[in-house]
Amino acid sequence: MSNYSLTGRTAVVTGASRGIGRAIAVSLAREGASVALVARNAELLTEVKAEIDALGGISQVIVMDLATEDAAEKLSQELDFDSLNILVNNAGGNSFMSSTEKMRLSGWRKTMNLNLDSIVAITQALIPRLVNSGNGSVINVSSVAGLRGSPFMSHYGAAKAALISFSRSLAVELAGQGVRVNSLVPGWIETDLTDFLRTTKESEQGALSRVPMARWGRAEEIADAALFLASDASTFMTGQELVVDGGLSAMP
Image (cartoon, rainbow, N blue to C red):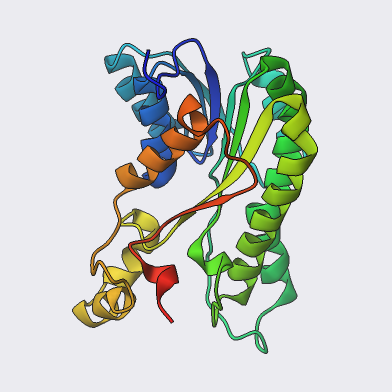
């Protein structure tokens, strides 16, 4: 059996309705995992489930807003799996740009809640099931914004940097209990969340000007990296950042 096979394993993927989350969920299911699909949009989740069904896979749809206070408890109650092998904390995002001077603290708090607080809560709730599996892998999807300065997105960069730090600390805490924790760090990926950077040729060229590979990444390329972290191909890897950004973070 391939080291990438996930036959008989269970997974939760948040933000699974579109983009990177959808690609990861389908990739894990293709390799044999039973996948719980978590997001706010029921219609889009149904489409993802249909795609997994067509592959002969097994999936569960859980519709919820992970930024709500009771989301972790609700997810824990609705989840069909008593033990959990893979948790992909992918839900997150950024809805605005602002200088730090003019940024409203309400916007800061909203960004932190979505990109950090909700992930901590979900992970806390599911740690017992990850330990129970005897072979757990937590994949926290961060961003290159958390690795370098992010002018006019200090709120988002700070949240993603904190997520990387949280992942490292949790990795050390859980290593003795059979659970690995790593950060997956995408660069500029061609999804609807980056559509605003492609509204004009100039804005697109500006975004790609510091990417040595001079192109957008594909959601499937991030999914391949997630599959590596979820599978037995990375059994001696924990507390690390896997950066998939076309060389952006290597630029001076």
